[in-house]
Image 1 (cartoon, rainbow, N blue to C red):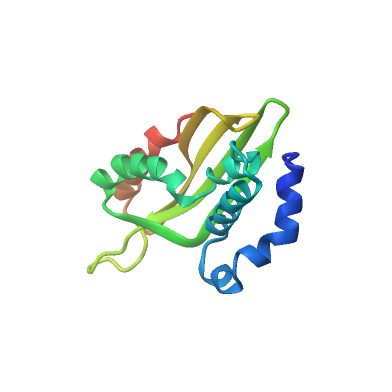
Image 2 (cartoon, one colour):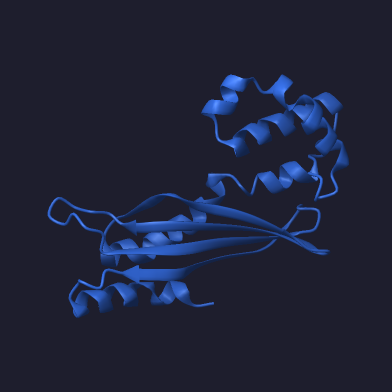
Length: 174
């Protein structure tokens, strides 16, 4: 909130967060959900007709924002290579603030999903969903989704390694 220049939201967060969001909820909920709930209460309490800039940006941080990218990647990879799954602990979010825009970048790691007959992982990959918003976060200017890194088990036969790499070729293009 402070970096975005949303001073009212920053002061309110600093003063009231613990009061409005019980500590029990802080332990059991995702932080982006808690902040969204909290800032929604800020809007109600302050009688704001428009959501604060901070809340508009936070909406891009929620995992629901990733669904379009995940479904796109799944639609390209899974028919060729089978199921994929999340690699736990590998979801990073960065927010870049420029004079004329705000970029929210999600980076996630996925991996092949072991089956009954295959215990090892054949591959893993990192992908990014990049959302570019105008500086007030009122409009989505662009959204891109691409695979930024693929790692294939070198013990796999070369024909299978080639098949895996080819499945990702379309997703790696800029």
